Length: 153
Image (cartoon, rainbow, N blue to C red; front, side):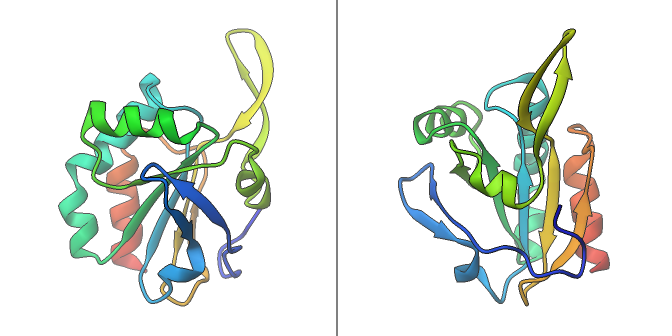
């Protein structure tokens, strides 16, 4: 797991727009890097809509928001269009970045165990270090929680 105060591991992933996005290219701006399990599911949708609805506040804070899941680009495009999401979704189908950040692991749901992304958010400071790690994110309060972290950091 990546901890607060450590350098955020750099990565390059493909966005919903088919562009390659590298964390290192965003130096100089705070980055909200949120890992979520799957597009268009109840919790993930609530989380994304919270960010969408408060997006002006994220922009005012100068923050770049990046959502990362194992879904492919086509799923991200559908999700963005369906919900009018103004921020970038990144495809991590091999869960390499999720593993580097320590958010890929065993999960239990409906009486079964499977491997997946544990909902976690990293606020990366403009210098590239991790300013805040948020575990067990609550989708309904996620946007407010992240905005509070951005204003305190």
